[in-house]
Image (cartoon, rainbow, N blue to C red):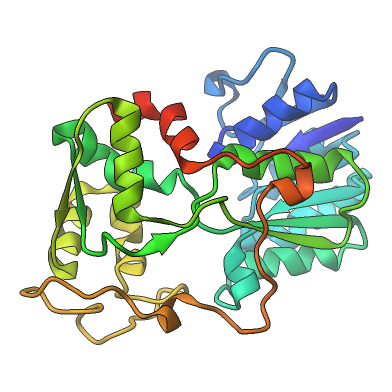
Length: 302
């Protein structure tokens, strides 16, 4: 069975490729830059771009199942191409924000395109990615072993990207998950302070947590650039999931006071939303704790 993995060089996609190869499947990996993909031996690496559906027919030819990275702008066309190519099952990397009712513009349209295709489908909806810690805090930890954080006691349940991949692979190769949306969390509720401590332990060095105001944190992460700059306004409460400003000219609080923690109401979705599960509910294997994630990425913080 040939399985096409899109987003194959991403945080989740790389592990999907690796786990499928371990399972003995024939893996075809889609990437815009095959020459720099760096994927495991045995992977058939093919060129293609989900943002340019015209590049996909050769990659889809003969594929029976597909792991789909979400690109809402082209989702309907991509799914239609998959149907015409003979793909029978799509496992979509979606988001727990759909379960919570926050996401109506990004992942949800892709889910609907997949569901309306008539193919077998499974949605994998992770919540907070543990790897966000690396993108947000990595530059300052590497620079001077410091984390800038206005909400050190705000809690989350970060999930290891490898657990997400193992859930996706289970849905790709096993029956019993068709027509299901798996909303995933990590196995522990941890504050930002506790996550920083886990990273410090993995490094074997002290990492200082600098509690500051929201406005100062916003300025810091905007200057840092990259993923942190792109996501700071949402993560710090200046805008909602759709990018709409939450409070005129500011987020949760002003520049001259250290903020209180956000209220629980700000962090919850609809009361009838199904509770998330850990990867173990799908794979039967214990989920990886955050400390394991920190050790796996210790070199990235050095």
